[in-house]
Image (cartoon, rainbow, N blue to C red):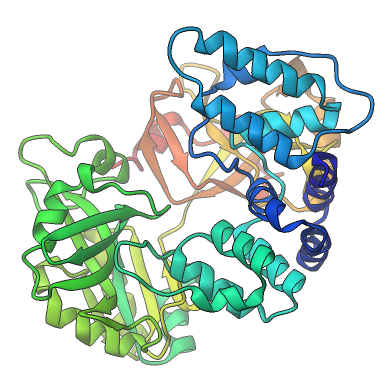
Length: 498
Protein backbone atom coordinates (compact mmCIF):
# COMPACT_ATOMS: atom_id res chain seq x y z
CA UNK A 1 0.00 0.00 0.00
CA UNK A 2 1.17 3.49 -0.77
CA UNK A 3 1.91 5.84 2.10
CA UNK A 4 -0.34 8.32 0.28
CA UNK A 5 -3.32 6.05 0.98
CA UNK A 6 -2.68 6.24 4.72
CA UNK A 7 -2.14 9.99 4.55
CA UNK A 8 -5.45 10.41 2.70
CA UNK A 9 -7.44 8.40 5.22
CA UNK A 10 -5.66 10.14 8.11
CA UNK A 11 -6.69 13.54 6.72
CA UNK A 12 -10.25 12.32 6.12
CA UNK A 13 -10.53 10.93 9.65
CA UNK A 14 -9.22 14.15 11.20
CA UNK A 15 -11.69 16.27 9.25
CA UNK A 16 -14.87 14.52 10.42
CA UNK A 17 -16.50 14.49 13.85
CA UNK A 18 -18.64 11.45 13.05
CA UNK A 19 -17.40 8.36 14.86
CA UNK A 20 -19.24 6.15 12.40
CA UNK A 21 -17.59 7.87 9.45
CA UNK A 22 -14.15 7.56 11.07
CA UNK A 23 -14.72 3.82 11.56
CA UNK A 24 -15.91 3.34 7.97
CA UNK A 25 -12.93 5.23 6.54
CA UNK A 26 -10.41 3.27 8.58
CA UNK A 27 -12.08 -0.10 7.99
CA UNK A 28 -12.12 0.41 4.21
CA UNK A 29 -8.36 1.08 4.28
CA UNK A 30 -7.62 -1.86 6.58
CA UNK A 31 -9.43 -4.27 4.25
CA UNK A 32 -7.04 -3.37 1.41
CA UNK A 33 -3.87 -4.23 3.32
CA UNK A 34 -1.60 -7.11 2.39
CA UNK A 35 -0.86 -9.40 5.39
CA UNK A 36 2.72 -8.12 5.75
CA UNK A 37 1.52 -4.50 5.73
CA UNK A 38 -0.95 -4.86 8.60
CA UNK A 39 1.39 -4.13 11.53
CA UNK A 40 2.87 -1.03 9.87
CA UNK A 41 -0.45 0.42 8.70
CA UNK A 42 -2.25 -0.09 12.02
CA UNK A 43 0.66 1.40 13.94
CA UNK A 44 0.86 4.44 11.64
CA UNK A 45 -2.89 5.02 11.78
CA UNK A 46 -2.65 4.79 15.57
CA UNK A 47 -0.10 7.62 15.37
CA UNK A 48 3.22 5.94 16.07
CA UNK A 49 6.09 4.23 14.21
CA UNK A 50 6.60 0.50 14.70
CA UNK A 51 10.00 1.25 16.23
CA UNK A 52 10.14 1.90 19.99
CA UNK A 53 12.71 4.68 19.60
CA UNK A 54 13.90 6.43 16.46
CA UNK A 55 16.65 8.54 18.01
CA UNK A 56 15.60 11.55 15.94
CA UNK A 57 14.33 14.66 17.70
CA UNK A 58 12.63 17.79 16.48
CA UNK A 59 15.83 19.43 15.25
CA UNK A 60 16.75 16.40 13.13
CA UNK A 61 13.27 15.72 11.78
CA UNK A 62 12.61 19.34 10.79
CA UNK A 63 16.24 20.15 10.01
CA UNK A 64 16.23 17.94 6.91
CA UNK A 65 14.41 19.74 4.11
CA UNK A 66 13.75 18.60 0.58
CA UNK A 67 11.59 19.67 -2.33
CA UNK A 68 8.49 17.47 -2.18
CA UNK A 69 7.89 14.85 -4.82
CA UNK A 70 5.21 15.54 -7.41
CA UNK A 71 3.67 12.07 -7.45
CA UNK A 72 3.33 9.60 -4.56
CA UNK A 73 5.53 6.52 -4.92
CA UNK A 74 6.47 5.60 -1.33
CA UNK A 75 5.23 2.23 -0.08
CA UNK A 76 4.53 1.92 3.64
CA UNK A 77 6.96 -1.01 3.96
CA UNK A 78 9.70 1.12 2.41
CA UNK A 79 9.01 3.83 4.97
CA UNK A 80 9.11 1.31 7.80
CA UNK A 81 12.41 -0.08 6.52
CA UNK A 82 13.95 3.41 6.44
CA UNK A 83 12.70 4.24 9.93
CA UNK A 84 14.07 0.89 11.11
CA UNK A 85 17.49 1.80 9.73
CA UNK A 86 17.18 5.21 11.40
CA UNK A 87 16.48 3.63 14.79
CA UNK A 88 19.50 1.33 14.47
CA UNK A 89 21.93 4.09 13.56
CA UNK A 90 24.28 4.97 16.41
CA UNK A 91 27.89 5.83 17.14
CA UNK A 92 30.38 7.97 15.26
CA UNK A 93 28.90 9.64 12.19
CA UNK A 94 25.35 8.63 13.16
CA UNK A 95 24.00 12.17 12.92
CA UNK A 96 25.09 12.55 9.31
CA UNK A 97 23.86 9.06 8.42
CA UNK A 98 20.43 9.79 9.97
CA UNK A 99 20.19 13.01 7.99
CA UNK A 100 21.07 11.11 4.81
CA UNK A 101 18.35 8.54 5.50
CA UNK A 102 15.78 11.23 6.21
CA UNK A 103 16.76 13.23 3.12
CA UNK A 104 16.33 10.12 0.97
CA UNK A 105 12.90 9.54 2.49
CA UNK A 106 11.68 13.13 2.31
CA UNK A 107 12.86 13.63 -1.29
CA UNK A 108 10.49 10.85 -2.38
CA UNK A 109 7.54 12.15 -0.33
CA UNK A 110 4.87 14.55 -1.50
CA UNK A 111 4.16 17.60 0.65
CA UNK A 112 1.24 15.94 2.53
CA UNK A 113 3.41 12.84 3.02
CA UNK A 114 6.27 14.94 4.40
CA UNK A 115 3.95 16.56 6.93
CA UNK A 116 2.53 13.16 7.91
CA UNK A 117 5.98 11.60 8.31
CA UNK A 118 7.31 14.40 10.49
CA UNK A 119 4.28 14.22 12.78
CA UNK A 120 4.51 10.42 12.87
CA UNK A 121 8.21 10.39 13.77
CA UNK A 122 7.64 12.88 16.58
CA UNK A 123 4.50 10.99 17.73
CA UNK A 124 2.50 14.14 17.23
CA UNK A 125 -0.01 12.85 14.70
CA UNK A 126 -3.43 14.10 15.82
CA UNK A 127 -5.94 12.53 13.49
CA UNK A 128 -8.85 11.37 15.65
CA UNK A 129 -8.08 7.65 15.21
CA UNK A 130 -8.23 7.03 18.94
CA UNK A 131 -7.85 3.52 20.27
CA UNK A 132 -11.59 2.91 20.70
CA UNK A 133 -12.27 4.07 17.14
CA UNK A 134 -9.41 1.97 15.80
CA UNK A 135 -10.65 -1.14 17.62
CA UNK A 136 -14.11 -0.72 16.11
CA UNK A 137 -12.57 -0.14 12.67
CA UNK A 138 -10.57 -3.37 12.94
CA UNK A 139 -13.74 -5.20 13.96
CA UNK A 140 -15.58 -3.75 10.95
CA UNK A 141 -12.75 -4.76 8.63
CA UNK A 142 -12.86 -8.32 10.01
CA UNK A 143 -16.69 -8.41 10.14
CA UNK A 144 -16.71 -9.38 13.83
CA UNK A 145 -18.30 -7.87 16.93
CA UNK A 146 -16.26 -4.93 18.31
CA UNK A 147 -16.26 -6.57 21.75
CA UNK A 148 -14.04 -9.37 20.42
CA UNK A 149 -11.34 -6.95 19.29
CA UNK A 150 -11.60 -4.81 22.42
CA UNK A 151 -11.33 -7.80 24.71
CA UNK A 152 -8.29 -9.21 22.90
CA UNK A 153 -6.60 -5.79 23.00
CA UNK A 154 -7.46 -5.41 26.67
CA UNK A 155 -5.99 -8.77 27.59
CA UNK A 156 -2.77 -8.24 25.65
CA UNK A 157 -2.51 -4.52 26.42
CA UNK A 158 -1.58 -3.79 22.80
CA UNK A 159 -4.25 -3.00 20.21
CA UNK A 160 -1.69 -2.62 17.43
CA UNK A 161 -0.32 -6.14 18.00
CA UNK A 162 -3.79 -7.68 18.23
CA UNK A 163 -5.13 -5.80 15.22
CA UNK A 164 -2.15 -6.44 12.96
CA UNK A 165 -2.17 -10.15 13.84
CA UNK A 166 -5.92 -10.47 13.18
CA UNK A 167 -5.72 -8.58 9.89
CA UNK A 168 -2.80 -10.73 8.76
CA UNK A 169 -4.00 -14.13 10.06
CA UNK A 170 -7.75 -13.75 10.36
CA UNK A 171 -10.31 -13.14 13.09
CA UNK A 172 -9.65 -16.57 14.64
CA UNK A 173 -6.40 -15.24 16.05
CA UNK A 174 -8.40 -13.02 18.42
CA UNK A 175 -9.08 -16.11 20.48
CA UNK A 176 -5.35 -16.42 21.23
CA UNK A 177 -5.43 -13.38 23.51
CA UNK A 178 -5.39 -14.19 27.21
CA UNK A 179 -4.68 -12.54 30.55
CA UNK A 180 -1.14 -13.19 31.71
CA UNK A 181 0.85 -11.99 34.70
CA UNK A 182 3.56 -9.51 33.61
CA UNK A 183 1.57 -8.58 30.50
CA UNK A 184 -0.02 -5.24 31.46
CA UNK A 185 -3.73 -4.72 30.94
CA UNK A 186 -5.22 -1.42 29.82
CA UNK A 187 -6.77 0.20 32.91
CA UNK A 188 -10.49 0.69 33.38
CA UNK A 189 -11.39 4.37 33.29
CA UNK A 190 -14.16 6.48 34.77
CA UNK A 191 -16.64 8.88 33.23
CA UNK A 192 -17.36 12.25 34.78
CA UNK A 193 -20.56 12.77 36.77
CA UNK A 194 -22.12 15.95 38.10
CA UNK A 195 -22.48 15.17 41.80
CA UNK A 196 -21.91 12.22 44.10
CA UNK A 197 -25.58 12.14 45.01
CA UNK A 198 -26.60 11.91 41.35
CA UNK A 199 -24.10 9.09 40.76
CA UNK A 200 -25.35 7.02 43.71
CA UNK A 201 -28.98 7.63 42.73
CA UNK A 202 -28.16 6.39 39.21
CA UNK A 203 -26.21 3.28 40.25
CA UNK A 204 -28.05 2.34 43.44
CA UNK A 205 -25.91 0.71 46.13
CA UNK A 206 -22.37 1.46 45.06
CA UNK A 207 -18.79 1.65 46.22
CA UNK A 208 -17.54 5.20 46.77
CA UNK A 209 -13.73 5.34 46.62
CA UNK A 210 -11.44 8.23 47.43
CA UNK A 211 -9.94 9.54 44.18
CA UNK A 212 -6.19 9.75 44.64
CA UNK A 213 -4.24 12.30 42.61
CA UNK A 214 -1.23 10.04 42.15
CA UNK A 215 0.29 7.82 39.50
CA UNK A 216 -1.97 5.02 38.25
CA UNK A 217 -0.14 1.75 38.78
CA UNK A 218 -0.74 -1.89 37.94
CA UNK A 219 1.26 -4.30 40.07
CA UNK A 220 2.01 -7.83 38.85
CA UNK A 221 3.50 -10.47 41.12
CA UNK A 222 4.52 -14.10 40.67
CA UNK A 223 6.53 -15.36 43.61
CA UNK A 224 9.34 -12.96 44.40
CA UNK A 225 9.18 -11.26 41.03
CA UNK A 226 7.16 -8.01 41.02
CA UNK A 227 6.70 -5.64 38.08
CA UNK A 228 4.99 -2.25 38.32
CA UNK A 229 3.39 -0.75 35.21
CA UNK A 230 2.17 2.82 34.62
CA UNK A 231 -1.16 3.86 33.14
CA UNK A 232 0.34 3.78 29.65
CA UNK A 233 1.66 0.24 30.35
CA UNK A 234 5.31 1.27 30.77
CA UNK A 235 7.49 -0.74 33.15
CA UNK A 236 8.31 1.65 36.03
CA UNK A 237 9.51 -0.92 38.57
CA UNK A 238 12.89 0.76 38.92
CA UNK A 239 11.16 4.01 39.94
CA UNK A 240 8.76 2.21 42.31
CA UNK A 241 11.12 0.02 44.35
CA UNK A 242 9.19 0.73 47.55
CA UNK A 243 5.88 -0.22 45.96
CA UNK A 244 7.40 -3.45 44.66
CA UNK A 245 8.81 -4.33 48.08
CA UNK A 246 5.42 -3.70 49.70
CA UNK A 247 3.73 -5.95 47.14
CA UNK A 248 6.00 -8.86 48.13
CA UNK A 249 4.53 -8.71 51.63
CA UNK A 250 0.92 -9.20 50.48
CA UNK A 251 -0.92 -12.45 51.23
CA UNK A 252 -0.76 -14.12 47.82
CA UNK A 253 2.00 -15.37 45.52
CA UNK A 254 0.44 -14.36 42.21
CA UNK A 255 -1.76 -11.38 41.44
CA UNK A 256 -2.50 -8.33 39.30
CA UNK A 257 -3.57 -5.29 41.34
CA UNK A 258 -4.87 -1.92 40.17
CA UNK A 259 -4.18 1.20 42.22
CA UNK A 260 -2.33 4.47 42.62
CA UNK A 261 1.19 5.36 43.65
CA UNK A 262 0.95 8.30 46.01
CA UNK A 263 3.31 10.43 48.05
CA UNK A 264 2.18 11.08 51.61
CA UNK A 265 3.61 14.03 53.55
CA UNK A 266 4.72 14.00 57.19
CA UNK A 267 1.29 15.41 58.15
CA UNK A 268 -0.43 12.38 56.64
CA UNK A 269 -1.95 14.35 53.77
CA UNK A 270 -1.43 13.41 50.09
CA UNK A 271 0.93 15.56 48.08
CA UNK A 272 -0.01 17.06 44.72
CA UNK A 273 0.55 14.91 41.63
CA UNK A 274 3.57 16.89 40.48
CA UNK A 275 5.22 16.40 43.88
CA UNK A 276 4.59 12.66 43.76
CA UNK A 277 6.34 12.60 40.40
CA UNK A 278 9.23 14.92 41.21
CA UNK A 279 10.14 14.22 44.86
CA UNK A 280 10.24 10.41 45.28
CA UNK A 281 13.47 10.37 47.25
CA UNK A 282 12.98 13.34 49.53
CA UNK A 283 13.53 12.61 53.26
CA UNK A 284 10.37 12.46 55.34
CA UNK A 285 8.21 11.49 52.36
CA UNK A 286 7.06 8.01 51.41
CA UNK A 287 5.78 6.80 48.06
CA UNK A 288 3.37 3.91 48.55
CA UNK A 289 0.82 1.92 46.61
CA UNK A 290 -2.88 2.21 47.41
CA UNK A 291 -5.16 -0.35 45.75
CA UNK A 292 -8.79 -0.47 44.70
CA UNK A 293 -9.05 -3.52 42.43
CA UNK A 294 -7.68 -6.98 41.69
CA UNK A 295 -8.12 -8.72 38.32
CA UNK A 296 -6.07 -11.90 38.83
CA UNK A 297 -5.28 -13.96 41.90
CA UNK A 298 -3.32 -17.22 42.16
CA UNK A 299 -4.20 -18.51 38.71
CA UNK A 300 -7.80 -17.27 38.68
CA UNK A 301 -8.87 -14.45 36.36
CA UNK A 302 -11.27 -12.02 38.03
CA UNK A 303 -11.67 -9.60 35.17
CA UNK A 304 -15.23 -10.77 34.44
CA UNK A 305 -16.24 -11.02 38.09
CA UNK A 306 -18.49 -8.26 39.49
CA UNK A 307 -16.78 -5.51 41.48
CA UNK A 308 -18.42 -6.76 44.67
CA UNK A 309 -16.47 -10.03 44.34
CA UNK A 310 -13.24 -8.28 43.35
CA UNK A 311 -13.45 -5.93 46.35
CA UNK A 312 -13.93 -8.85 48.73
CA UNK A 313 -11.00 -10.68 47.13
CA UNK A 314 -8.80 -7.57 47.34
CA UNK A 315 -9.45 -7.42 51.07
CA UNK A 316 -8.06 -10.94 51.42
CA UNK A 317 -4.79 -9.91 49.75
CA UNK A 318 -4.15 -6.29 50.74
CA UNK A 319 -4.41 -4.87 54.26
CA UNK A 320 -6.56 -1.84 55.05
CA UNK A 321 -3.55 0.48 55.21
CA UNK A 322 -2.75 -0.22 51.54
CA UNK A 323 -6.33 0.07 50.28
CA UNK A 324 -7.97 3.20 48.94
CA UNK A 325 -10.45 4.65 51.44
CA UNK A 326 -13.95 3.56 50.53
CA UNK A 327 -17.53 3.02 51.65
CA UNK A 328 -20.47 1.09 50.22
CA UNK A 329 -23.76 2.96 50.32
CA UNK A 330 -27.08 3.54 48.59
CA UNK A 331 -27.63 6.78 50.48
CA UNK A 332 -26.82 9.92 48.40
CA UNK A 333 -26.39 12.00 51.58
CA UNK A 334 -23.87 9.57 53.06
CA UNK A 335 -21.98 9.57 49.75
CA UNK A 336 -21.92 13.38 49.70
CA UNK A 337 -20.53 13.45 53.25
CA UNK A 338 -17.79 11.00 52.25
CA UNK A 339 -16.96 13.19 49.22
CA UNK A 340 -16.71 16.32 51.38
CA UNK A 341 -14.46 14.54 53.86
CA UNK A 342 -12.22 13.17 51.07
CA UNK A 343 -11.72 16.62 49.54
CA UNK A 344 -11.02 18.18 52.95
CA UNK A 345 -8.30 15.57 53.51
CA UNK A 346 -6.59 16.65 50.30
CA UNK A 347 -7.88 13.98 47.92
CA UNK A 348 -8.96 14.82 44.38
CA UNK A 349 -12.56 13.69 44.82
CA UNK A 350 -14.28 10.29 44.63
CA UNK A 351 -15.13 7.55 42.15
CA UNK A 352 -18.57 5.94 42.47
CA UNK A 353 -18.55 2.35 41.21
CA UNK A 354 -21.29 -0.09 40.22
CA UNK A 355 -20.86 -3.21 42.38
CA UNK A 356 -22.26 -5.48 39.63
CA UNK A 357 -19.86 -4.43 36.86
CA UNK A 358 -16.93 -6.49 35.55
CA UNK A 359 -13.54 -4.85 34.99
CA UNK A 360 -13.95 -3.10 31.63
CA UNK A 361 -10.28 -2.74 30.79
CA UNK A 362 -9.38 0.06 28.44
CA UNK A 363 -12.89 1.51 28.51
CA UNK A 364 -14.39 4.61 30.05
CA UNK A 365 -17.60 2.84 30.97
CA UNK A 366 -20.65 3.96 32.89
CA UNK A 367 -19.82 1.60 35.77
CA UNK A 368 -17.27 4.05 37.22
CA UNK A 369 -18.24 7.69 37.71
CA UNK A 370 -15.69 10.23 38.93
CA UNK A 371 -16.63 13.40 40.77
CA UNK A 372 -14.20 16.22 41.51
CA UNK A 373 -14.87 19.68 42.90
CA UNK A 374 -15.04 22.12 40.01
CA UNK A 375 -13.58 25.60 40.33
CA UNK A 376 -14.09 28.55 37.99
CA UNK A 377 -12.19 31.75 37.27
CA UNK A 378 -12.93 34.72 35.04
CA UNK A 379 -9.87 35.09 32.82
CA UNK A 380 -8.86 37.25 29.89
CA UNK A 381 -8.07 35.75 26.49
CA UNK A 382 -4.70 37.29 25.61
CA UNK A 383 -4.00 35.27 22.43
CA UNK A 384 -5.36 32.43 20.31
CA UNK A 385 -3.84 29.91 17.92
CA UNK A 386 -5.13 28.91 14.50
CA UNK A 387 -6.64 25.43 14.66
CA UNK A 388 -5.79 22.37 12.61
CA UNK A 389 -7.75 19.40 11.27
CA UNK A 390 -11.47 20.08 11.42
CA UNK A 391 -10.75 23.37 13.27
CA UNK A 392 -8.61 24.70 10.45
CA UNK A 393 -9.55 28.28 9.64
CA UNK A 394 -10.78 28.99 13.17
CA UNK A 395 -8.95 30.55 16.09
CA UNK A 396 -9.06 27.75 18.61
CA UNK A 397 -6.42 27.23 21.30
CA UNK A 398 -6.83 30.06 23.82
CA UNK A 399 -4.05 31.68 25.88
CA UNK A 400 -5.54 32.51 29.27
CA UNK A 401 -4.41 35.35 31.49
CA UNK A 402 -5.08 36.47 35.06
CA UNK A 403 -5.05 40.13 36.02
CA UNK A 404 -1.84 41.42 37.56
CA UNK A 405 -2.72 44.15 40.12
CA UNK A 406 0.50 45.91 39.10
CA UNK A 407 -0.71 46.06 35.50
CA UNK A 408 -1.15 43.71 32.57
CA UNK A 409 -2.13 40.04 32.45
CA UNK A 410 -0.14 36.93 33.35
CA UNK A 411 -0.53 33.80 31.26
CA UNK A 412 -1.73 30.65 33.07
CA UNK A 413 -1.93 28.19 30.22
CA UNK A 414 -3.94 27.23 27.15
CA UNK A 415 -7.15 25.40 26.36
CA UNK A 416 -9.32 24.50 23.39
CA UNK A 417 -11.77 22.39 25.39
CA UNK A 418 -15.42 23.35 25.77
CA UNK A 419 -15.63 25.33 22.53
CA UNK A 420 -18.63 24.63 20.29
CA UNK A 421 -18.59 25.25 16.55
CA UNK A 422 -20.76 28.30 17.08
CA UNK A 423 -18.33 29.69 19.64
CA UNK A 424 -15.33 29.00 17.39
CA UNK A 425 -16.98 30.87 14.54
CA UNK A 426 -17.93 33.79 16.79
CA UNK A 427 -14.59 34.14 18.52
CA UNK A 428 -12.62 33.93 15.27
CA UNK A 429 -14.57 36.90 13.92
CA UNK A 430 -14.36 38.89 17.16
CA UNK A 431 -10.72 38.07 17.92
CA UNK A 432 -9.57 39.29 14.50
CA UNK A 433 -11.24 42.62 15.26
CA UNK A 434 -9.09 43.06 18.39
CA UNK A 435 -5.88 41.59 16.95
CA UNK A 436 -2.73 43.18 18.40
CA UNK A 437 -0.15 41.29 16.37
CA UNK A 438 0.93 37.87 15.12
CA UNK A 439 3.71 35.44 15.84
CA UNK A 440 3.59 32.42 13.57
CA UNK A 441 0.25 30.66 14.13
CA UNK A 442 -0.45 32.72 17.27
CA UNK A 443 -2.70 35.79 17.08
CA UNK A 444 -2.11 38.18 20.00
CA UNK A 445 -5.16 40.08 21.21
CA UNK A 446 -5.97 43.26 23.00
CA UNK A 447 -7.10 42.13 26.48
CA UNK A 448 -10.83 42.76 26.11
CA UNK A 449 -12.57 39.37 26.15
CA UNK A 450 -13.32 37.58 29.43
CA UNK A 451 -14.23 33.87 29.57
CA UNK A 452 -15.38 31.88 32.58
CA UNK A 453 -12.96 28.97 32.80
CA UNK A 454 -13.62 25.77 34.73
CA UNK A 455 -10.60 23.86 36.03
CA UNK A 456 -9.73 21.06 38.42
CA UNK A 457 -6.83 22.63 40.25
CA UNK A 458 -3.74 24.82 40.13
CA UNK A 459 -0.18 23.54 40.13
CA UNK A 460 3.25 25.13 40.26
CA UNK A 461 4.82 25.74 36.88
CA UNK A 462 8.15 27.05 35.64
CA UNK A 463 6.71 27.41 32.15
CA UNK A 464 4.59 30.45 32.85
CA UNK A 465 5.74 33.76 34.41
CA UNK A 466 3.19 33.63 37.23
CA UNK A 467 4.68 30.37 38.50
CA UNK A 468 1.34 28.54 38.34
CA UNK A 469 -0.78 26.79 35.71
CA UNK A 470 -4.36 25.55 35.54
CA UNK A 471 -5.09 21.80 35.46
CA UNK A 472 -7.67 20.58 32.93
CA UNK A 473 -8.91 24.04 32.00
CA UNK A 474 -12.01 24.26 29.80
CA UNK A 475 -14.25 27.05 28.59
CA UNK A 476 -17.55 27.35 30.40
CA UNK A 477 -18.95 30.54 28.85
CA UNK A 478 -18.24 34.02 27.51
CA UNK A 479 -18.70 36.68 30.19
CA UNK A 480 -20.23 39.50 28.17
CA UNK A 481 -21.10 41.19 31.46
CA UNK A 482 -17.46 41.54 32.50
CA UNK A 483 -14.51 43.53 31.25
CA UNK A 484 -10.76 42.89 31.74
CA UNK A 485 -10.73 44.89 34.99
CA UNK A 486 -13.25 42.41 36.41
CA UNK A 487 -11.01 39.38 35.70
CA UNK A 488 -9.61 37.37 38.60
CA UNK A 489 -6.16 38.30 39.83
CA UNK A 490 -3.03 36.20 39.87
CA UNK A 491 -3.20 36.15 43.66
CA UNK A 492 -6.67 34.59 43.49
CA UNK A 493 -5.34 31.91 41.16
CA UNK A 494 -2.42 31.17 43.46
CA UNK A 495 -4.83 30.70 46.35
CA UNK A 496 -6.06 27.50 44.67
CA UNK A 497 -2.56 25.98 44.58
CA UNK A 498 -1.84 23.36 47.20
